[in-house]
Image 1 (tube, rainbow, N blue to C red):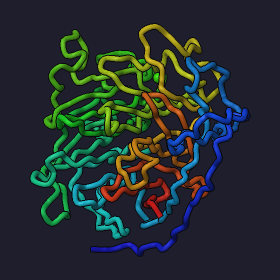
Image 2: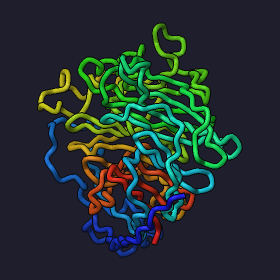
Image 3: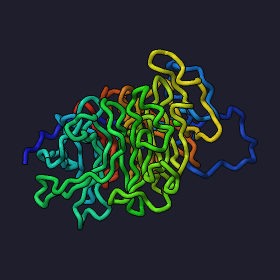
Image 4: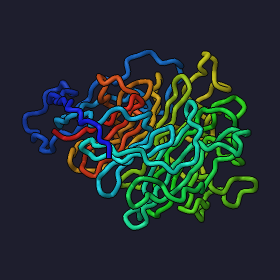
Length: 422
Ligand SMILES: [Ca+2]
């Protein structure tokens, strides 16, 4: 095994306590002092975003964008535990606490939480690794400890590459000596193939029934974009499939003529973030908007999330997207949006008691913004936002929850970070 040098580059973030001073009025003398300790949402700061938006659209409800800032009070430390990875795209935990990391050009690696990175594990078909394609997400099967099965998303070439590529879900067994993926097979294809290398999505996550949610992209071109509103193709969707790649019984369009029975939700642009809320079990998704209009969505079966009909961004050339509207009957509003964008990629709910104030917060990797967004959610609304690791100047591609209560993040620049309680 080739091990990377452990990079002893740790620094500490320790945020000052903030007094809750929202109300200037002196309380009446008889009023008892509140005994509840302050929570993180009691410390309200100005919104973290201070730049002018690209579009001048109004949010549909208060708090849908530019929510109050919050700051983590618990001292935590940020450590670069490995670097030199080749375009890592996903990081997630194995049951034994080690980390699975995909590299976009078509390899899997296993890392320890101390930063030892194993050699490249192969066994995948050739992936379309041009531009935004590649070997993308990975998730261990719920029964991994006995089955050793791993599930992946990837940009798969058509036969002879003549028709281009598409987002596919594949699976294979991690060999006992961890050197290769055995019997790799594709179990789902977000049809049709298309010849570009943009907007593949994609993430996959298992739910507590052992089925898979998978996000896809709409392939970016003006020609493919309308496909996000149609049910006869796999572009701009969340699909819900079994471990065999079959539609889950009860899927919303399973009896709809000409609809792909795997579809769970539609009207997405390019969703690279997907996770299940630890206590509600709800599916949450992040997706990239155009210039402005990056979104967080709460995903419900059969719903239409609006792209490209509604949204909060504008085209890269400055024009309106479609009719330039943000709301429409029958289309879902994002829980939250950003303008300007952060280019949200992978995300994870913090699911540990180690840093208590982070419990069930959503951590989202920002690519163009080069930070990690910490999103505080209460009753399915965003109530606070914080920017973490801004000084690192990295494109944060994915975030994984460690079994040790730390967060792990990979960057396009090839770093693996641990964010842990000090
Ligand atoms: Ca939307």
